[in-house]
Amino acid sequence: MKVLGIESTAHTFGVGVVSEDEVLCSVKSMFEPDEGGIHPRKAAEHHYQHALEKLNEAKQKSADFDELDAIAFSQGPGIPQCLDVGAVVARSLAEKHDIPLLGVNHCLSHISIGTRTTNAEDPTTLYVSGGNSQIIEYRSGRYRVIGETQDIALGNALDKLARDLGYPHPGGPEIENQAGKTDEIIELSYPIKGMDFSFSGLVTETQRKIGDVEEPVLCNSFQEHAYAAVVEALERAMSQSGSKEALLTGGVAMNSRLREMVEKMCEQRDAEAYFPPPAYCMDNGAMIAHQGLIQLKNGDKGLDLTYSGVKPGWRPDQVEVDWI
Ligand code: ATP
Ligand code: FE2
Image 1: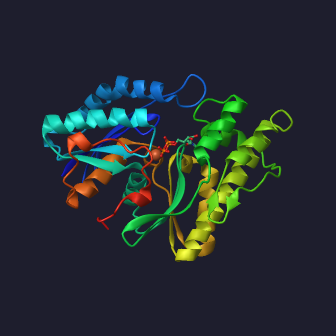
Image 2: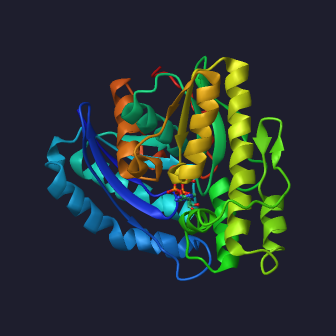
Image 3: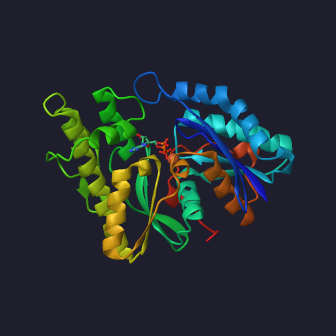
């Protein structure tokens, strides 16, 4: 079986093709704003402009599209204008090849490709990206959100701080680079609330210190406080459920300091830490294709094209999971 997946929830337009045995291709184009954050219409325009080129690239790298068994697309959550592009392209392909159109939850795809590429079995997932920050565990028929951000996502917090510091978008990598220049830390508020966390206050507090505190120290302090909070929440979740596996995914999972903290916490708990390859932590089409493949094998007949609208606010715990 072969499934083609389309990702377009935010700044990435990605196309991936997977079979049961391998990822046949994963290609993408990322919208890079000249200034500020992601402008929905401009990001959507970017996706339209690159859709055909990425589909052709995928065709050359993987196989004849006539061999495909289904088309999967990110149905949500995400930016409506961006989601719509993927949906329109996916519908056209499904119609053209007369194969099922599978609607896939983006968050669950991160977990599925994470477990596929690491061989984790039943992990507690820390999913931290530009649009989402959640701790997720599978329990009786659904992925439950055990903890999550009460305001903005961790990646969004990094991007906001980076913008004020004049770094390019996305800001996570440059904040990591700056933080690596020092060991010095100043005290900031610690943004954990039980198993939830929140980053708006921490961003404002750090922004107010720009100019008074050296940039590497600010970046390092922000990272230490924010990452310690999510890792503490992850540890609490694992302690409550008795989980022996942690999976770190989403764009912020690229951060080496965060990986180090998760690794250390797992070591102390005699648990295993799993990190998918960087290309599969960030948004990509292969993860959507893989999630589609799982659903197809489990009897998902696909959506009626007329009722295949996007779901911008679709939470992972709203999905009935019948494939586990
Ligand atoms: P989602 O749709 O799942 O919310 P996304 O659209 O935010 O995902 P991703 O590629 O998963 O896309 O994540 C992008 C985020 O990851 C950005 O906020 C970026 O700053 C952050 N990021 C990327 N690299 C690093 C890094 N090295 N350290 C910290 N954050 C990083
Ligand atoms: Fe994502």
